[in-house]
Length: 421
Image 1 (cartoon, rainbow, N blue to C red):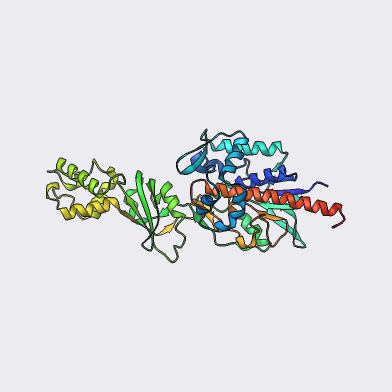
Image 2: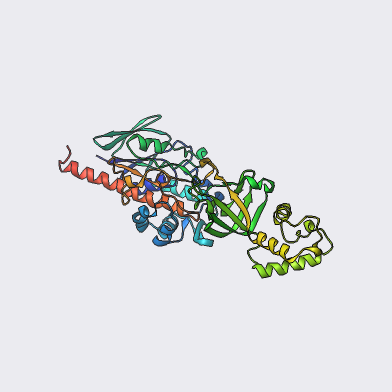
C-alpha cells in the first residue's frame, strides 16, 4: 500500500517539501486554496525573487537573529549553495549580486515558481485547490486532514502555510490555528522586515533618498548600519534600509528606537565642511534657506534648515563656524524617532510562530503529534534581508519533506513485518 504525505500550503516551503517527499518515494498531495502556487514568492524582491544567499552554514546562521541554532541541522544539509544548485538543475540560471544576494538571471520571480510547479507535476504530485480546516489525530499520530471541500487520509502531513504577512497572498495565520488545535504553542506574531512609524517626519512624505547611510539605535546603542535607499511615507519610513533595520528592532514594548541618516556618506566631516564652504561662497549674498539647493534634495531642505537652528533668512556670509558645525553634524546624522513598526500585514515576513522547542530540528517533526511536520515561515524563526528567509523555507521544506517520506517508509516496513497489522 502506497503511503501518503499531505503538504498544506503551496508557497516556497510547501513546494520544496512536496518535491522532496515525492523524490523520496512518497505519494504526495499538495493543498493550496490559491489558483496559482507561490503567490507570495512571485512578489518577493519586487518581483525579482531574492532566491537565496550565496553562503554556507556559518554565514546563514549569523543572519538568523531569531532561533538560528534551531536551523543548524537543516542548513548543514541544505545551504545557500545547495539551493543554487537545486534551482539551476531545474533550468533556472542564477546570478549573485551585492551582499551575495542571488536572483534569477531573468529577474523574474515567476521563473522560480514555474520551475517548482513544473517539477511537482513531473513527480506526479497531486495539486488540489482546497483549504485545510482541521487536523485529525489518533493515538498521538496524524491520521488525516479535513479540507473545506474534501477529506484527506495521510500517513504524514507537513504544515507550510506561512505567517501573517501579506494576507492577500493567503498567509492568514490559519496554519498556526491548526497547530494550536493539536497542542502546539504559538509564540506572539509580529512583523519583521517591516516599514516603521515615525510621525515626526510627515512633511517629508514622498521623499526618496538614495546612496545614504543609515544607523539604527536601541536605547542609544548602535544595533545596525548600512548604505542604500530610504523612502519617507505618510506614516514614517520604508525602503530596503528600513526593512533591514526593522529586523533588529524587536522590543518596542520596553525599548526606544532611533534612526540616524547620513545624507552625505561619501564625504567625511572635513570633506563635507569644504563642500559647504564652497557652496556658501557661491551663495554668499543669499539667504541661508536658499543655499543648500546644490547639496540636498529640495524637499528635505526646509527640515534641515528648521533643525539646524540657523534662521532661514540669515545671509550665508554671516553664518558662524559654530553654526556651520551644527549643520555638519545634522547632515551626517539626521535623526528619525521611531514609535512603532507597521502592522504584520505590511511586513515581508512574520516573526513568531510555532515554538521551535516543540519541533525536532533534524526532521521538522512535531514532538507532540507523530507524523506532523512543519516548514517555512510558520515556524518561529526569521532572518535579515538578503535571501535568508527564503533559504529558511528551502532548508526546512527539504528537511520536512525527506523526513515525512522516510517516516512513511518506516511505517510501511513495520506493516510488512507484522509490527502494526
